Length: 263
Length: 131
Image 1: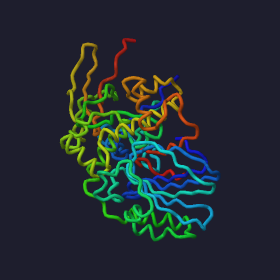
Image 2 (image 1 turned 120 degrees about the vertical axis):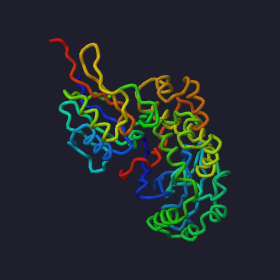
Image 3 (image 1 turned 180 degrees about the vertical axis):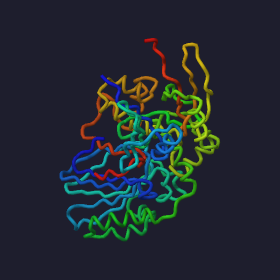
Image 4 (image 1 turned 45 degrees about the vertical axis):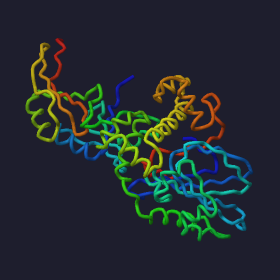
C-alpha cells in the first residue's frame, strides 16, 4: 500500500461496524490536483478547509469504475466514510442501480443524506464531522440481500478478482443472472466489473511492489497477456503500466476483511 | 535453505486448531491474540494456520480451500505406526474419508482424508528408505 503524506485511514472489521469499511481523512497543504482511483465503493465525504470560515461541503459518491482528478486549494481537507461494497444502498437507496460513477454535490448530496447536511456548517470540527458520518452510516437500515452478496465479495477478493461468474453463482446457490441482479441492487455494479476492479488493484500493486517485469505482473494478476493488463489500467486508472503517476493514492481496498490496523 | 513452515490459509483459525487437535492429536503451541494466526506443535517444521483475510494485504491471491471444491494439488502427511486407528479418529472427528488405510507395494500403509476446510491430509506409516 502506498499512501502519500496527509492521507490516513482506519479500517473497520465487520465486527466493529456493519456498513463502515473505513474512515479516512486527507489534507493538502498546497494547491494542486490528485488522481482518485476507482474502488467500486460508495463514499460519503465532507470537504472543508483549514480556514474554518469556509463552509464544509458534502459529497456522496456512487461506486466508481473510472479514475478522476480532484483539484484542490491550499489547506483543503476531507473526511470520509468508505462503505462496504455491498452497502451502497445505505447512501443511494434504490438508486444504487444507477449510481455507478455518479457524484452528488450540494443539494443533490443533501437530499441523499439530510442529517449530514445539518452538520456542514461554518466552524464545524473534524471530530464532530467524523462522528456524524459514522453515526449516520451505521444508523441507517441495512439494504436487503447485502449479506448474501458479502460471501461472494469475499471470494472475489481472496481470488484477486480471478474467478468465473458461473462458478461464483453456483457457490451462492443462484443463477448468474440472479447474482448479477443482487450485485446491481447492493454494490451497484455487475459481478464482472467489480471483479475486474479487484484484479486491477492487485495488478497495480504487483507492478509497483512485486519486483518483477510487467509481463510477470500481468501473468500473476491473471490477465491473458500484458496487453490485457494495459487495457485494464487504461480503463480503470487512465494510465498505462509503464507510466504510473507519482504519488498515487492506493488505499487498502481489501474489502475491510482485515481489521485492527489503525493507521 | 530450510523448510520452516507449512501455512494453511483458513476461514476460521481457532476452529481449525481445535479440529486438528481432535482429529490428528496435535497440540497448539501459539495463537496470536487476534486469532488470525496459530501454530501447532510439530517440531522444527511448523504447521500453522493463518486467516484468509490477511492475504490481500500482501498482494497474494489464491483459490480458497473449501470442502465443496476440488482440493488443491498438495497435501499434509502425518506419520504414525497405527494408521487404522488414526484414520478412524480423524473420520470420527469430522474428516471426510477419501481412501481408507491400505498397503502399497513399497511397504507403507497409507490413507487419505479431507479436513474441515477441504484440505487433503494423508495418514501413513513412515517410509522405509531401506537404510
